[in-house]
Length: 259
Image 1: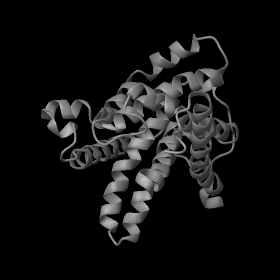
Image 2: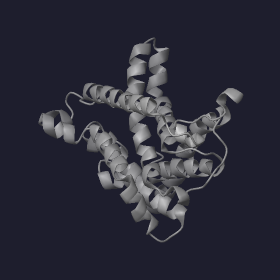
Image 3: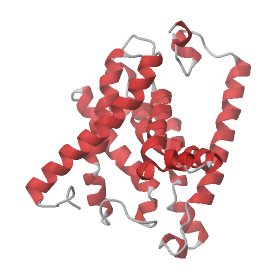
């Protein structure tokens, strides 16, 4: 476990400001990472015969998952202003976290599915579709909030491990199935596409929530924490979805669970 002590994605977590060469290297690495993801998105996102494929190319860009990158850059660029604004909003921190987290995650999901123009999600109506995801996404948000009570982590950890959860579960476990089918290159490319989508969706609230209003765990994440960072959000996704869909079926007769 000693080798895992201080499992940190930033030197600042250990009280050490990053050196100029390391900071420059990280910035270039981030640029290359996102450039690669943009290229993969352009490769994967168009589905022949879909409504999106009939749009002009510039409209396809506007409604593509590439807008997740725009969302991420926007939140990072204005995180100080947004955090200051949230500080002035009265109310319990957990309530504020959910109030900002649910709209951001459902917005991210809407961008990730290209506004429903490629295939279909739970419901063709985007507003109802977002509401139906509140249970699953709320479960994930609460899982990360609970983990922050014990562990010292930040948005970069949420990005990485939420992305890994997405790699494991997206499209009915498509990435693991692709590996088992004997196509490791295809699996790697698909994983590289999926990871930033899930990472952006669930790390977005952590970019702008005031740090002092979040739980202040003190443990440095180790190997056990890394396993929890994958397992707890994944389990909470299914528990939250089941509870929310059950409530919806009982109150509104939606019959989501039986469909």
